[in-house]
Amino acid sequence: MKKRLFPVVLTLATTVGLAACGGTDTGTGGNGKEAENNEGNASSEDPQFLNLLTGGTSGTYYPLGGEMATFISDGTGVETTAQSSNASAENVAQLSSGDAEIAFVQTDVMSNAVEGVNSFEGEPVDNVLALGSLYPETIQIVTTADSGIESVEDLAGKSVSVGAPGSGTYVNAEQILEIHGMSMDDINQQPLSFDESTSGIQDGNIDAAFITAGTPTGAVEGLSATNEVAIVPIAEDKVNELIETYPYYASDVIEAGTYGMENEVQTVAVLAMIAVSDTLSEDLVYNMTKSIYENAENMAHEKAQFIKLENALDGIGTDVHPGAQRYYDEQGVSAK
Image (cartoon, rainbow, N blue to C red):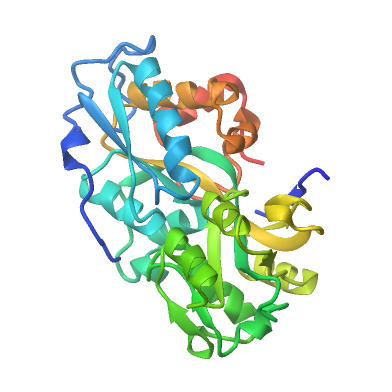
């Protein structure tokens, strides 16, 4: 069955891969001045290296980011390296601090950063811009078929992985519990990575895990090789209530057959996006944008099929880098 998506649309743990960073860009940034670099040849004003922050090695960001980095390198003439990280919230913080230039981020986390809420409470970010949306990131509440957990309410009193504090997954878990009249105090929360989460379920150390990632997710596929996986559904009325309260969510369905499950599962998703430092020149980001969207069909990762130019501005509620905007204007792409 074809997947249905209905758009309705800090903590720093570790400083990663500074050797791969380009350092401070002395170029023109997002001020509209061009460095005469439309043909993909690196300008002297561009950094020599770009650091693309992704996520954990068992998620979707890391392998897809590796492919993307290759096309960006080829299309811009600037060597780009994908780095594993703690994902969305940390990625935005590192972009803001100048420790990276490009990053995968959830659209909801990016909105939080600009507004200065949740993980960015009182510390709004004003120097990170959107490049474009990529694909839906499904909120998967993973457990096993014999756990007895059949609804979000059944998580009460259970040991549940919710991701690192401040991560996009953590915020998703908070908001989904809130819509169900619950809070983190109602569960025994565990701040685990995707790999740690599925290992914990397999070993019986935890009962369930919130995992926000494109499906199928590698860590959950690994679990399905040894256990009968179940995904906890979110009832339609709760989906609608969540979307009404937090418009960056969308209704989503996990297909039957995913992780060996017999039936499809109703849940929600946010969108994965690429964010960039505002220090990058207009021409460099123009070529980065072109490299991503014109090569998506050449990427092997399963999620690449969802990366489409016509959807590049979906869910983007923050400012777009002038270089990306110029490319979209030339291609006739506008927000829906």
